[in-house]
Image 1 (cartoon, helix red, strand yellow):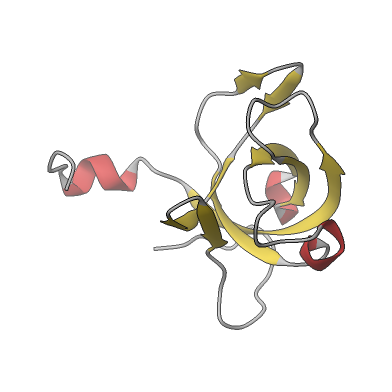
Image 2 (cartoon, one colour):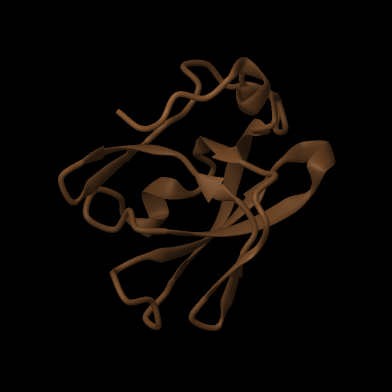
Length: 111
């Protein structure tokens, strides 16, 4: 377990639901990854890099809802600017995406 945080620390994290609207290969990444374009509704469109190629095919990701942290600073990955962090459960080298059980409006906060 990592360091304990306060509830106030947790409230700074902006977790939102978004829908993947575009998936591209990312051959420049050190580890196999996709470039994702995600619709967060009123928050707009954000891009992210995700190392999820072992369990997910590009076509299976389209229109899939995911959970992401949307208030991290942008991060340069190779020649790509990642604007959010898509969340998943890490099982060895596999990452299983987190998503709502039922479809919700893009941009819905996660609490």
